[in-house]
Length: 400
Image 1 (cartoon, rainbow, N blue to C red):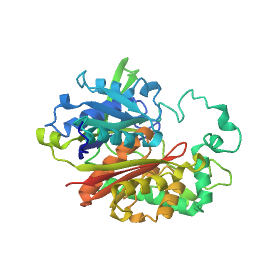
Image 2 (image 1 turned 90 degrees about the vertical axis):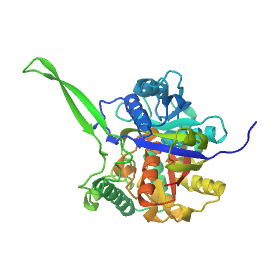
Image 3 (image 1 turned 30 degrees about the vertical axis):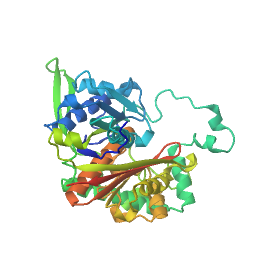
Image 4 (image 1 turned 135 degrees about the horizontal axis):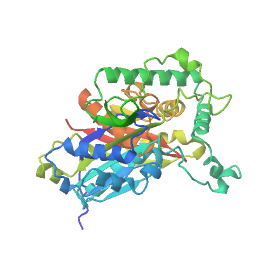
């Protein structure tokens, strides 16, 4: 058996624009969003034969309803991939999209595959947070241990982090304001154009005057979340939503969103066979557990873990996509690990750009890779906290 660990390369990283909950994608199915990015990923590397794709691994945090029934395989079929291309859906909540990249990379690194697609899709419009019929174990509501903490709403865990790490309301609002400002500047500069594949939204309405169904088409190509009218003054007027005496508001929390992303990973042999130019090399990935009551601090444990495994330092990371589930947890991680704030979310984060759960890891990976390519930077990190008390972190080395 060949035990040589092979290098793994990313040759395509695309995503949809991210829609606000009940926004542009309110009537667009998540499996259609997935099919769209799967087709777009292959279109971006025309020399790659779709028949070479050996598996498609897709993240989804709430795999039910319109994104149930192994949504990965449904997306593959909707994308008109050959029947022999299999697919699997993966759920590690908010890190699902990043987890799939790691799983695909492992297969290639071990010599079990040459070409794989990883990604994620999520509609928070169609599938509510927590799903439709989840029934928690009664033990979650008994006692005072970590079992009970699993039942805490995400907002309460953010309040816990804000209190424990002494993150003020003003600091959270300032972080949120800057997220919107950076996102708007990036949009105006066209910084997302290389990664976004526009989506044509078709809608049908009855025309009572003609007694016919009228079709409308609109090209959606810009993230819907960033607000140009956001200000510190407006953020300060928002009331806490999880604790009446708390500091976490809708304004300094991530937006619920809809979107999808996909990356193509290949071996060096596939690079040569299909004459592909790599965007980046996948370096490594790590996941770690933390107390559920302070789940937002997860990256604090995952980041040192992946750095230790790779022999890299935090200072070597040029671009850090630290998913902004809440400003409180992002600031706590930055504070504890002494991360250079200028490297964190240069184009804004989930507070402005949205957080379509299982798709976010793939979407933020596309942003980090293309952002580093445009800025001539070498190392990118994507990291996030995960519900029930976990954190994940992945590293990419940019190659051109």
